[in-house]
Length: 405
Image (cartoon, rainbow, N blue to C red; front, side, top):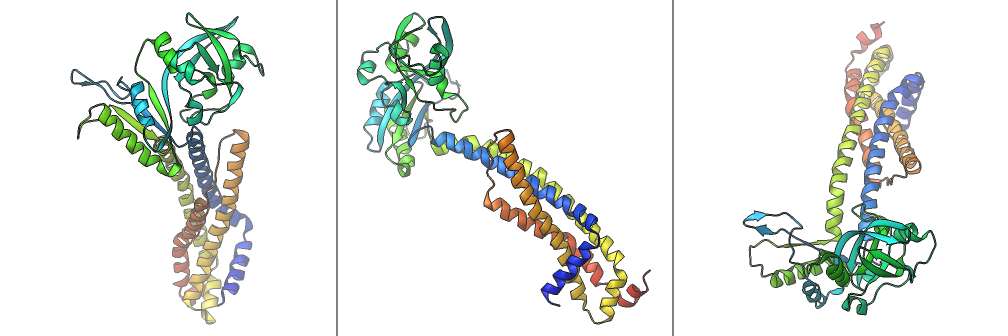
């Protein structure tokens, strides 16, 4: 029997009980739609994280303090105070490093007239805007002379500027008070948005790191160092070179643990997306249970169909149909239910993902491999759960089938 004839008979058989066929497909529609939606939301979250991290700077390599041992006791990551301005200067000599920004952080109350806010203060140098690819909205960033002299100047994040002076107001030339220091505002950064850690980067202010060290914190060490590799394909080599230089400068011998951590954008992406990937897989697996339920529903309906069409099967076998023709016929019907339901489920998943993107502003990306996989799984479920009823139909004895009431 030709495949077209088989399809025509399958469509006619399924059309006899339209409501039952649609309810059977519903399990596949819900299952495939749920899987597509969960994967789309998970991939969207991963893409958003990657975009935030890669948009945070140009080929950025970040050096953080590592672990410090005190009296044989580990103080934990970030406790080391051995990152120094001289380390940053040594990194500038590396051929693959184009910019280096020393960084010191604190949190202080910033007062302007009757307005005030508690904001994160980032002490850094003139390379910061190059490393972070961060343009100005008003005024200018501080210069090398300001860093050398520990000048009392400050550049505001746009949110801080709006809170202290109002929206779309250029505060360049105004003065703010930080602790007991009067500091001149020399510019406002352009909007940047959230960082990879979720921190609002626009809710920060920037001062020369020497000013923060000497006048606000009274410390000599750095909290971290930002470096920019010469090109995207040299980031890994640059990170390795940075690590080698710092190990030599900190007298860290072979086999000894580093007292610093060197992270690249790829490292940060991997760290941030690992939890998201695990959660996405878990949700997709839970949603996949409904696919199993849908497959059981297909088997149940096909078994009912075999019972209802016993005399039809007997008649077809009696006039010359082969058992393989009967098996193929019922198998095609099961796969047709599954594939059509899977196609509608993919459409439902697309619609659900777009709805979540519109309604809750959640990022959602439907990957092509998920569509192909969902469609393949739907067809596989039809074959797997449809084979037993089809085999049962093909094994019927023609005489007994014709006698069936």
